[in-house]
Image (cartoon, rainbow, N blue to C red; front, side):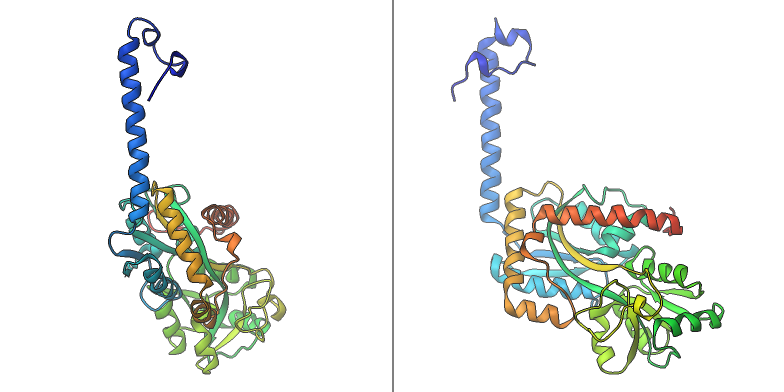
Length: 350
C-alpha cells in the first residue's frame, strides 16, 4: 500500500510530516493493513454464517402469540440458513429478562430476540433495565402485527362496549381483569379502558398470554385486553365472548366483531406488533443475511397461511428493512411513553 505526504491526516503530530516520516508511514501502513484484515474477517464471518444453531429468545411462556411467531419463523429460517433454530422461552419482568440476555450476547447473529410491543415499548419503560432499548440492540425486521380486543368469559352479562361499561360501573370494583405484567400491551390497554370507561376493576397478572387466556376461558378472570389471534379459536368455539376490537378499524381476522368505538367506548387503539433484533454491533452482512431469511419466510405461502390463520398481518416488503423496524419502534416509543407516564404506569423499583 503506497502512502504519500497528502495521506497523512491533518491531526497527526508535526513530526509525522518531517523527521519521523518513515516511522509514521510504518504505523499508518500497519493500521491500514489491520483495517483491511478486519473488514476481510467480517466478510468471511458473514459468508460462513451461521456456524452453529440459532437461538430465538422469546420473553414469554410457550403457547403465546410471540412464541408462535418465533416457532413458525424459526422453522423456515432453518431451511434458508442451513442451520437448526431453537426457541428459548425466558419469561419474567414482562419480557425484559430475555431481551437483556440478547443485548449481552455475542454479536455474531446466533442469538436473536423475537420481541413485541409489550417488551420493546411498554416494559422497557417501566422496568429498571440497564440498556438503551432503542440503540443497544440491532433491528433486523418488522414481523407480524395483530389487533387487541376485549375478550371476556362467555357468561359475562355484556355483549357490546356500552353494556360492558355499564357492567363495570355496577360491579363497583369487584370485577377482575387478566393482565400480563406491568407495562405490557395487555396492561396498558386495560388501564386505558379503565380511564376512558370510568369503571373500576382489579388486575390479576399472569406470566404470559396463554395462562391469561386459559383463566378467562375457565371463568377465573372476567375479561382481558388480549391479542386477537390468540383467542380467535376460543371465540369460534364458543368458549369466550368478545366485547370489541381495541382499534379504530375492525380486524380482518374477525370482521364481524365491531370496534370498541362502534360499541360505545371510543379512543382505545393499540396495535400488537412483533420484531426481530440481534445484539448491537452484529456485522451488517450478518444482519442482511438474517433479514433476507425473514423476507423469504414471509414470502412462503405455507408460512403466510399459518400466520394469517391465527389472525396475524404480515408487513409489506418495504416495511421489513432494519431501518423500517427502527423507525417504527421509535415512533411507538414516542407515542406511548408520554401516555404511560401520564397514566402513572410504573414497574417495580421505578
